[in-house]
Every structure is written in C-alpha cells, then in structure tokens.
Image (tube, rainbow, N blue to C red; front, side, top):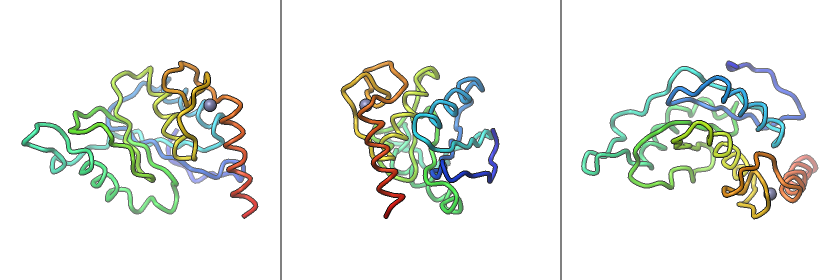
Amino acid sequence: MGISEKGSPEAPTKILIALMKPVERDILLNIKTLIEKEFNVQIFFKLEREYVPISAFDWKNLSYNSSLVLEKLEQRTLDLNSFFSLIIFLGRLKTSNTNINLKSRIIFVNFTEERKLLKDVGISVGKYLGLDDCNEECMMNPKSSRIELCKKCIMKLKKRDSDINYK
Ligand SMILES: [Zn+2]
C-alpha cells in the first residue's frame, strides 16, 4: 500500500491519498480496490500522518481557514506534481467554511464517519475526472448509497478517456 513507481498504460491517472487522521486499513483497501476499478485510476497511500500547520488556524473564529489549509497543503506537495495528477487529503478539521475541496489538483475530504469515506472519495475522484452529480442510483449521487457508477457515468468516463487518448 506504500508509494511505488509501478504504473500501467491502462491506469494513467495516479492519485495519492494522504492521511491526516488514522483510517482503518480495511477501509483504505476497500477504497483502493473499488475506486481503481470504477474509475480506472491508480491509488497510492501515504500512511504516515500529515499535519496541518498551526498557521492555517483562524484564531478569531477558532477553526481552520479552509483556503489557508489548502494553500499550505499545496505548497507541501509541489514536488509531487509530476508524479500524481491528484492528491486527496483525508482528515477531520473544524473549518470556517465547508467548500474546501474546490481546487483541482489538491482535494481535502473532511470526513466524520469512516464508512462514508468511500463515497466521499469516489465523488471527489469522479468530479476530478469530469463527472457531475448524478441523479441515478450511482456513486456520483450523494443521496444514493450505491458505490458503483451508473451506465451514464461510465459512458461519460469512457468518452473522456478516448478523447484524451486520440488527441
Ligand atoms: Zn451516474
């Protein structure tokens, strides 16, 4: 589950998941297996805990400033740019605003329950790959408990892959 440099032409998008809070190994393995299968990406983990610098803390509101958190995390991962297309931080922070995952290359998933992580990470990866919220029984529908993509979303992903491959 560590960082390795193995790559395959079938899974060109490499995603790093970095933990800011311990997550059970079974849940991580589940995330890796399912997300790799559904989205045709490659998942790597950084299991040593990553910390948010105290300078990102907003002492007036006694919570973290989301944009500062992202900025700090981004600075820290600049040298990983060439290897990972996307870096997802998993953590639990009290933040001043909830829209913390809008930047494209770095995503912060603020989670409260481990069992919801798979869904949260799945939706983040899907959005990064160009999928929108979906109304079907689908991974991309936050209201549905389904953890697989629906046919519509699979077609969208396939179309995107072939557009990229033949450009
Ligand atoms: Zn869908």
